[in-house]
Image (cartoon, rainbow, N blue to C red; front, top):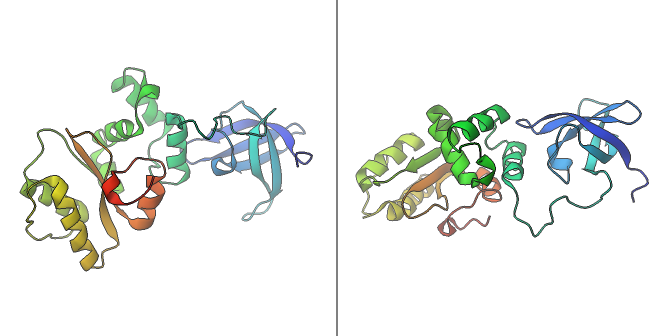
Length: 231
């Protein structure tokens, strides 16, 4: 039913945290989460919303938010998500929380020549981590650029990322090395695994993550088919 939908305007939205405030036509301010929206929130956008009691902290919050004049998604389900939508999803899931709007603007200017909207999500993330190695370590991101390192050197970098010693591999390539590392992690009852991302044959990128976090990330960022996790 649409009779209980109220009208308002997005008065603030903290993109990096995934929440904001909608000011209703009657002047009340209502908090909302991006996960309850059928579109990517933008400050100043007119919306319709359904409100209800907040689960924590008392007061009211938005339970459903949609663009005014429509009860359907702004982007058809069959259309691929835009970069903005993918970034918003990462932030909503608290997967790459440091990728703020300020950082996106800096990357657009200094890496993508002002055309970051045309870039693939992985390229944006790689540029972000290349500019902040401490954040790459924190998020478990690891990449190998051409020329690709020898297997022994790659193993040393994986060991550093995992913070544990790894046995000498019998692999003859980095692609063969990753399954061996994951078997060692499984045997050690280590909750993390190495997840290859869908890159070109010229370079490699990986996340070192626990399974639950990897499953959430794979819904947004393409993983290599060999991971066995559906995106």
